[in-house]
Length: 117
Image (cartoon, rainbow, N blue to C red; front, side):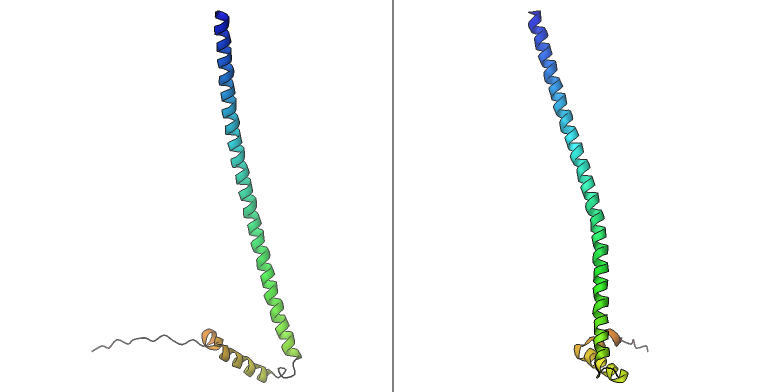
């Protein structure tokens, strides 16, 4: 009888140890998963920062090369070699597109004058 009781106690101890091991494994797995998530988030944030810088530099380079090409083409054109003619042509293009009035000529807002009597 004592042998059976001792055996049952040992089985219960094994079962509780297995439960504790399972809970510990689950806890360690969740901690490891949380740590991996934090590391992945940190790496993504760093790559996003470098990606932003790379795209900014690429975009700036593209704009500079585009305007350099415009400048070089206009300097090769005999029609645009004269600075006065180039100025008039540029102003005409800006006026036709509407950019002249939007960007360079500011119209003051209408103000209502209060009448004092």
